[in-house]
Image (tube, rainbow, N blue to C red; front, side):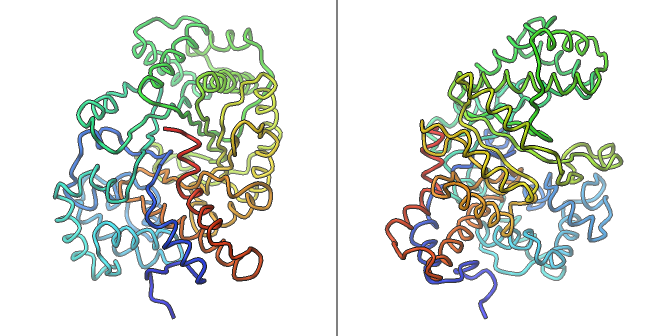
Length: 469
């Protein structure tokens, strides 16, 4: 029997052990999509305790705690202490066995703090005090935590109206840093016609960001283009969209002008108009990306904010989202095909949230590879509910069967936590185990030189060469 989380964790064959320890383990990390707050990186923040860095904003843990019967006061409440919240998480951890949270929790305790103790109700105080004391040293500042994991690039997720002042401050205050902190253009609110009042308020905010008036659709696109240019000037090379599905309704610019005119006044539009507006905006934004040589990302398939009570009490991203079952194939095909026919299909990453659609995504990317660069259109790594062992294996198996796993750009954290970077290790171990089992089953040759290079590429070099940050 193997001990829990030993050096060969998840590595079930000698080949897997060799590939991980000799080729994957020590590579740097390019985290090209996450939700880390740039202000905390720019200020090199030091956390006062482990709750602040570990439980604040982590809706994965919040969901588990609610499921375990923990009162919301001890999850997101304002009248309970950080230690009280940690106590309830420590109590919950043993109940998370076979959920990836159990692995991640103990990997993070080991990798950052050297704590090998299993976290539970009886060990919670010791773990809290040990980790919290360590966090108060400069070595465990936000930049220190990233350095511990050999993180080279962090791409945050930023709205077009964001000032990016913290990205500017980081460049100014840490000009010799080995870390690259780069923004990502996330214009979801600029195409969301679901709520006319919210859209009107957003356009008002965009006016302030560009210091100009937005009275018509042309003004609106010009303002977004100006922000797109500004993001580019600060090193942004990625956009990102969080969508239920790819919108690809037929539209004309005249259609969009009329719909925008009504939205600008705060008037509600019907569903047909809503979908047409989203489709038009998605296309226009994709063309912007192509013109600048950016990579566009599409995170597809979440049903968000299912629980109205939690949305009202806490807000979005509170742990009340789930996997959707939206029709994706026809819209995706139509959207990419139109861009391709116009010569405006940028490098693209599509992330799937419903495992039933893995093969659809894996085959869709093959339709639009054009030979210009390896793996121009990517099937992104297991995302959100699928960034666990089973989800990552299924994603890589679909990609292997339908495309080229060897050209895969690998893992990202998609996280709000500075302690989440062992997820890259988790991915690399799963990758090495997948390949190692095939070798020992005689399904792949024992070509250590090539397999080692393949593992290194997927873990690091493919992303480095793809993004060219």
